[in-house]
Amino acid sequence: MALYVANVISFTAIIYVQDNVGWGLGFGICFIANVIGLLVFLLGKRFYRQVKPKGSPFMSIARVLVASVWKMKISLAASRDSDYFYGDGALADNTVPTKAFRFLNRAALKTEEDKQFDGSYEKTWKLCNVKEVKDIKTLIKIMPLWSTGIFLSTPIGISSSLTILQALTMDRHLGPHFTIPAGSFLVFNLLATTISIFIVDRFILHKLRPLQRIGIGHVINIVALVGSALIERRRLEVVRAHNLTNQPGTVVPMSALWLVAPLSVVGIGEDSISLDNTAITDLLDRTTGWLPNDINQGRLDNVFWMLAVIGVVNFVYYLICAKFFKYQNQNV
Image 1 (cartoon, rainbow, N blue to C red):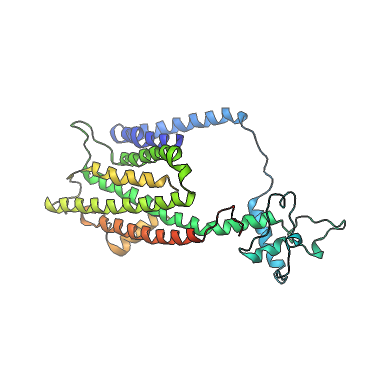
Image 2 (spheres, rainbow, N blue to C red):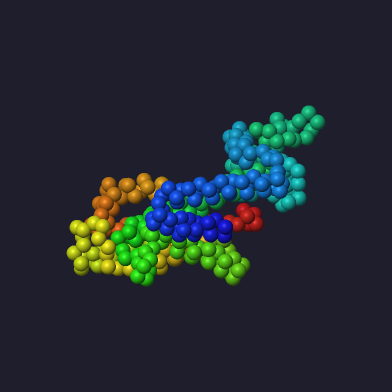
């Protein structure tokens, strides 16, 4: 909540100062805010409990992979639960070898070479405990679902940038004397996210499983992209109707408040959950011609339609990943 409130301030007050007073003052305010934040952090540091790290998770992953390869010739066909190294308390926590990615179980399989002089077993680069093996299996299982988030966040980032370009060409007046800065339109995205966080946390969270919430987020973002495409098509129709195609800088007689709806929908979708957005935008510009310097001569609506199609394909991919995903308490 604090992060989004801070972003709302930056997208409204700071941008207004930069547009109407000067960039120097705007950056100066940002500098002072960062100094104050740093001082508060340093003053509050002594109230935090410093927990010393007990090892690197990356080291644990590396040990499991090395031990699995080292014992790759050992057969698991006749292995029993008692043949594995559990370490301290793992067996009591019902952490037993699972069938998924069974080849990794070799990392926790005890052999005569792993036995110490006193007959005990200890973690080495040739022997890991069952919990470490289970942790890396969990990581592997979640990677496909994690990858769907890349193609979910990328369209959001691109559409947000393009929305600012749209706002620059549209009527941004709010009343006779106030003009909304184009960069401030993203505040509607933040407000929608903040409000949806409260609603989801209070009324929806306990009714939906995490995968269901993420799936709903995918659908919401597809709807938002379709809405953006339709609004851009309408904007281009107004441009052609008033012969503004070759008049860059001329305000299109269409209210920029039309952009609030898709931004708000995107904000709601963000609460349920990259590639370089600049690189993708540059690729589109080079290969399609949809993003010229004067967007009145371009086809931003096609860009939004393309992102919507990518969202649909990604959603199907997500459904496939979710179907095969097993929750932590399912011992498979």
